[in-house]
Image (cartoon, rainbow, N blue to C red; front, top):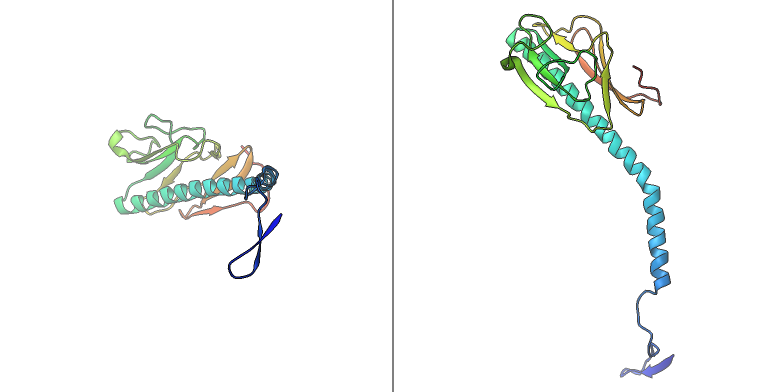
Length: 190
């Protein structure tokens, strides 16, 4: 390395001839390896965050739908139903809500929409395909009476992924809707 005297009388180190300033290939590869390692450590946490956001969005959407059905039943003084959609303007009977759900007026009490004009809302496949949304086969739909009550047993709609329970939406007999997350890992159930 050579030294040069500057105009102010101080010495300055000059770069050797032929050596460029900047990062060497090895330094760049080490930096890339560190970035890949950090990204690999952050990816599982990010995937968990995305999964949690999907479950939260699905629970909020279901809760809002059910609260809207209760309000509609009270305001219109008629039975209003929220059920899993069969994709053709009717209700599924197996309790699988994964493909969407619909809200309709049930004036004759047969638990199915009789006329397309009775359908108030139809939500088709509103959640990520990795989520499975199911209710018990004993209560596959939610019926609100004109006074806002939901007669019968409590309804629990479970949100699952790979047979692990991620969250639930519960409706009690008084018609109140709430959501819950399990405190520890548990199976989804049938």
